[in-house]
Length: 481
Image (cartoon, rainbow, N blue to C red; front, side, top):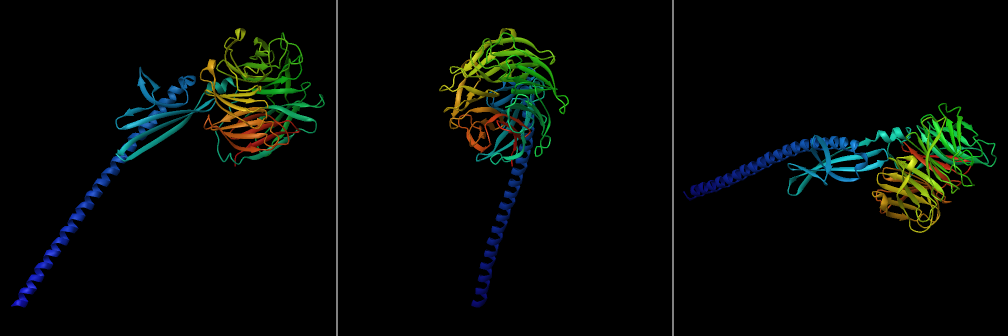
């Protein structure tokens, strides 16, 4: 009897354990099911929010593109919010809020003719979890391309520019050296000077295959050329002669260029009255001479390239070493120690006026100048502040952002693209230099190349850099790895 009771008690205890285990399993199952349901709901909510966020990001890009196209010069680099008022999209503030979403429109200038627009939408999926989506695009200012004669630099950077490589070179032969260049659609126009004035001073190089460039043609325009800028079917060259400072060359057939006009500047004389630098914009040539008797800065109408006509001039009282023109404003790199950059309003060439300037630290001359958005890049002659970046938002008060010592060398040419600046210098060990300018206040040397001689000028097109060199090995073509 006792044994039977003990068995029953054991069975009763075992049943209780089984019940407890069953309840635990059921509870765990319910918990897991709850987690799965809630997790699934969370995933569905995240997916729904992400879809809505992507739509907001896409709308942000589309609205910002329309605004930037209509207000190109009025949009500075930075973060904005997007709004819609009076039937038009507008950029204002630093972000905008749509329900649970925060949207930031970031605008950055990558080239004179191009801006990048990013639309970033973020939201809190939980108090400790933030999610975001992003869309971006590039916007091109076709007005800049049209007024520049189609010479706008092409596409952006790619590859490894910390390890650049030489694609090809061009040798002009002994006694000849390149003074300047311009590249348009992979055709390189070289200005040159030779020890013998009877040798060619203008070369057309076909660099369609950058690894195998070749001289398509050459011609002799006179005693030598100092600079060149190409637009349309013509190349405009600054001549070292003081009675024909502008040479106009028909290059519609690159195999047979023809000198079609030689223009003498009026009211200018002296040994400095030479075509030291030229810049083409909107059917006008902006030409700077060295210090001369008479005005050093000239605006010339070349709407008819065969018959150039002076529209106006301005006396600087110093060498003009480089010119950059954008939106009826001319930026001049000069040898004036008190104003290395002179800014002129050239909207009315018959009445040119000074609207700003920049006096860099120490007395080195302004040698080269380049502008992207509101950032001004200045190269100087040998000194301790060779490469300067400045904020030109207010022309009457241009502010230095950084000054960089390259070792007392001359920066003879500058071109920028995206986050890099490419420099042509006189440094005997690194004539070609690349600087990372992602931070305007703290640019950093990215990489460098040693050439046989001084680099005299530089240009960029489609992830390829072209450098003219003061030696018979006159052209270097460089790209990324």
